Length: 337
Image (tube, one colour):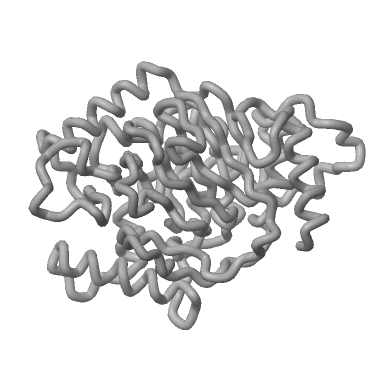
């Protein structure tokens, strides 16, 4: 995509969202999109007709690969998720299979049980309180627009982006989530990502490259960052620098749904506070596992399998085994996954 085309796409995108400044989107509904007379239902590839999304919202997701829904998750639920996260950080609860991660700049000698040293918890499918997020009716109502009625919760995270130490390690490199997933088709997978407080460029909001969900899965690896890189923070090594970048400014409870091929990342947290968000990747239960041997995903397969083998002492575990353990049916029936 040349620079003129990228500029034209960003102009259309900002007009759809009613933003005043290029490069920043203030999250709100996408009602107010211009004429849709030229867009026909048979052209929809990424969304399903179930009377939840408006035609404007469907068209926006089809074109851009993401959709923000304002004020979707209640303050009360977000406070409950915060409370449970703090309990996990204090080691008051230890859910089976949970991974607790810290920023690469925090040494083991500095580690004391508190939320100030935990940058992320993931795989909380056995934590009843946090997993409630994946079963909220208001979340699943929208998820079904992308996956259909049989829904699996496949990957769960609560991100606690720390204030940057000065080494820029709080950044997350531009990446595509499909790099981590050995199941397909990609169009039947969606991420729900909910802001747990006000999020903007100062504390490291999401940045997305609109329309990149229409492209292929790119090779990923660790970026060569001078200050270090957090574990499994793989990034795209070669991407079109002319693609428009859009920063998503979100309020507490706002939720963005996005395609697993959408290129996205987040900047460093320049504030003095921790930036929290909770998310889940959902998939159609009819999705199927693939063999990633001989593909660009071999590197993440080896890393994930090695970690699981060391952590649990398993010898013959496969990447499919890991994802089968993580997956939970949250609506309908479990089929392939």
